[in-house]
Length: 278
Length: 307
Image 1 (tube, each protein chain N blue to C red):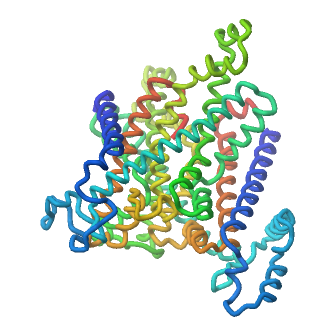
Image 2: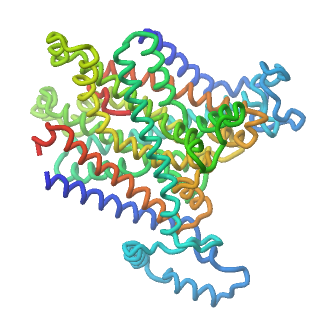
């Protein structure tokens, strides 16, 4: 497939995901939280006994799977946006400062980043989540805690690159303060690389949130998280495969689209990063 | 080089120490160990006695030092669940199952990943290349818990070819190893493909071709050798991915390893076991990275020259 076509398809898929997450819940025929006991484990419409009432079938409590996937998209997107905002802000602030100031601050902060990167992510998240209990806020805190380091590393490296450029020197000799230099000259120039990191992290965040919800320490039921839905459907996979399979498919499609777009952005914005990361 | 090594070793120790502190703090917050250990008929006096016995009346830093001291002597306490098993013993008894699974998965991903990467690079732009790249994309995007459930449904339930879960003979390894390895397989494939393409376009490969070296020899001897260096660089990451991935995969496949033990102990608020298992996993994590560092020094002459 030509590069451009796959990029456009992936971008389209991501836009669709965002639209579904934002306004999809307003157009739902069924309540994602309330089921009908008469419609338990109804198969999807295309199956032999399926009906058009529940296009993607129903789960054990008779709740519409499509409605829950749409509602789940909103939760996934919300976690992504909040995590990337928190982790991105903290990581970028520390990384830029570290690269700009240098010296002992840089050494200490970078050791901290090395440490954060050398700890097993999911185990740490599981531990935190088990301590504070499953809730949206805690999921966001846990995932941000383990992901800030990637922004820190990237923004530090980029700041080091930018800080000795002529235009920064010029700004300094013309008497501009450090804060102004960072905000007006450093940050705008390192932003593209950070956007690449953020894009690639959307996939990581979605999978982490889903994994934690799958393990029962993520978004608490009855809220429909994609990972939680896969976990719920797992015990009756033999009689009703769609309950587990379809929310998982939603995860795969979105993460795949994110990876394609992220790769394309890496190629365009910062080819030097190629082969360095995942 | 010796200095570099010592630095890395010190770093590893600090990481381990920090992790032990994090675990210690967390496990004290998770639950009240006294409430878990006491029976319903226990009196206040029993309670006080147990608190003193466990050292919980001591100040926090003292408890941590005691914990550290005991841990260094291999004493991690006992599980608070019914069996009261020795925590370290419990974790070590689950270690072989995890290591054999991760080992087999890693071996499988290395062999298949390198093969697919080379195949895709050599057949660049053809259907084969496209298929390999699609597989790699899928492998990097599918969450392992879902993949595991789907593989169980397809190969164990529908086709009946393989067992659904548990540990037994060689056939029991197929699905868990595949699930655990697919992400890494995709990563290795992409890495090898990219560096093979780079190597195939390089001057020394052009020279070899001009000199009349056969295409096979060009690919295998000249291009592949250099393409494997990045794979070695990421070996630590790969092994680490597998160790942490084990928590999810072992839970899905009811695999009796340390990943599932970690999950179960966290769910049961069994803090001595949590501490032990997280420390052991972290130690492996750090050890893997250390070994890769050494391997890298050995394999890449440029690194040796620099240090």
